[in-house]
Image (cartoon, rainbow, N blue to C red; front, side):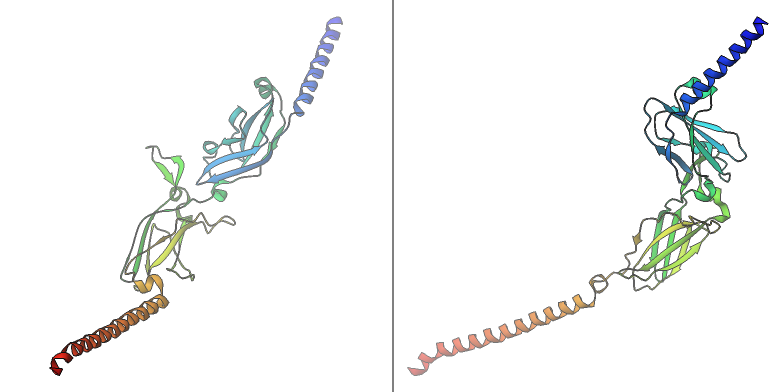
Length: 283
């Protein structure tokens, strides 16, 4: 009887201690402003505030995959979770756990903040394509560019590109316009090249964006740098007709002035010669 009573007291005391520890644990601050930042499948989880007297541990929960822990007992407010999201078509939720020690992290349910759901395939930002080569010859503008790379690797150690992941869902859009003009045209390709018919009398500027038409949101990626061709550029192309007219007027004025000065000098020479002959005529 005494043993049973002692066992009951021990269980009651253990339950009380557990509840006290749990109550103390829930007083820890939880993370706020939890956000996903992802470009070309390189994904960083960020949150606030900076911890003081406690730590954070990140848990990544997939709909069909096992829970993965990242950045265990960290005092940072961001965590690279790229390698936990290799199944890019799965939807994930992140839990930012607030913990005081490794013991509490292992044995108790710590307070945590949840992120919004994130599906890398649908939500990662498409990075800038790299333009490798371009030429404008006659009436053709040819552009060759490279797919952005991801952090994921093939077994041989080479990096996968976004094309390796998106495959036929990936397209690129070219925006181009006559230099010094604001009217844009566009073209689309599923390859890594563009060949556009242009006016061979004008130079053109352009940039490229990756697009995923199947997405509901975030369909267009970051813009590449803007480049311009420089074929057959003349002073008239560079500065416009107004400057050309001004130059022509100045040239005509200079020529006219030269003629007038020549006539004046010629008349002065003749007058001087006439004056020098007058004394001899009077002798």
